[in-house]
Image (cartoon, rainbow, N blue to C red):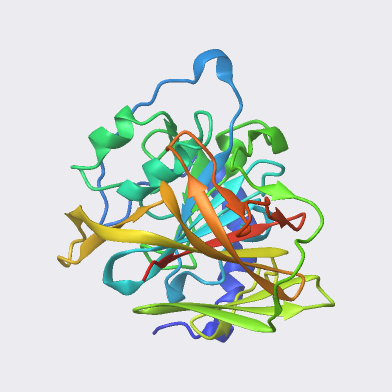
Length: 319
């Protein structure tokens, strides 16, 4: 029997106990049925340089509520096959006890992650044709086959929505804010803008709505019309939301149903909408190369400051 949205909190609240039991028993986990099972190796960064942890997170309705999203410094929302969405959570200032459900990597992730210095990428697997590209990318790839002790399956969820990461199994501590080489600036709100109580971004088969809450000093997140909550039931409410309009093209990859995987081009320039403090600001974004962060400026070139705290970046198709 399929679980209803009301019943999904139970499995997530039981996750900590399940993790403790599974790890104590030496339980390991492999990729899901639609992902590659190859064991991979990755070189250690020179000198053990600390960098961010990036985790690919499932965003199908059956995967909600997710665990550990509230601790991320940046959450990227990306289009995937069939018009659906997936999340990439980036951790630098704190590491939660658990993150998930973890899902597979995409080609676009490699370009997006080049802005960081040797990031660690946690993901459930990837298509076999994509694995050589991941091997050559300047990152530390950590799927379950590379770090089995850091993953476990929740017995309360069905595959492929049951794989979770214990970040402490990949790195001993959070690398710190200096690892966030995103190009984002934080500080006083930009002048101008227009009052905006709510904003919705639509994909062909998914949607995100952000509603300003003065009490929370953040934007309450809803996904596909349902409130986005933490594993404990609290609402997700980032202080800044960026809707970044980017070019999207078909990649050379398809899912097991034959749907083409979109490639999101995060290097280039275009327009964006920055939501903070109950106002919307029409801005420009620019990322000159994959090794750079993204700069957001007003029409006259003034840098745009984000609010302190979590930032959500939602990639939308440029018109």
